[in-house]
Image 1 (spheres, rainbow, N blue to C red):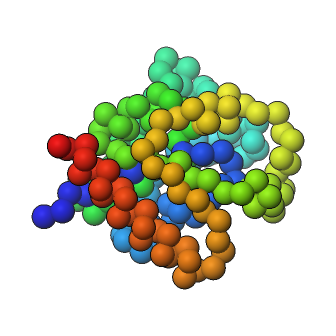
Image 2: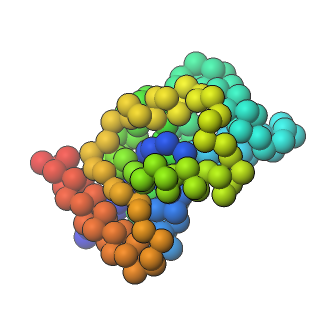
Length: 179
């Protein structure tokens, strides 16, 4: 029996991490866990508007309350379903989060997109590209990864082929980690 795939996606805002995670979940039945969703849930619990500033502040609060930059990774691991065919964690932005997931057998994937594509995606979300960078955006550039994936095509067939290649490479990386 093949071991369940476990991977996390890292990268700056607008590169398409969520699209990749949703694609893997839809095509392969993977459980998708979004670190951003965990923070959004906490914002809603606190009855705060879902603004970029509030999301960043609540993410910091969750980490500070637990005195642990890997607090969101711990929350993620607690949600992993034992029977899941695979798990994809979307939105890893801190080194400590990545290291906690790696210790649990996850393979890290850096998602990239051309800068013009990334900025276009941010503008489509009504997010300015010149927003002062929060520490999570700055540290996202240093998150340890095993593979890189360029999310550069809006063509569904090309994207699907890219996901298959990514899944093949993740399985190879997982196998190498167990040797």
